[in-house]
Length: 82
Image (cartoon, rainbow, N blue to C red):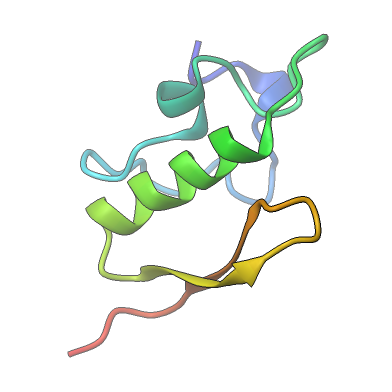
């Protein structure tokens, strides 16, 4: 199911998969954009943190809370540092 063509962009379909970095489908249980699936903000934060735990290229930084009391984060994604 990870290779379902309707969820793979031709811009990235040729890139190798990482065995260490989790995909959204593995973490959330469904493909992003799947019909009748809504991804809650807390689940998105969990996915970002799962990425940060597995990749040195991802960093999640809390920058405060929203008016509703939800955590607000910035996600940095960049090249590997030496």
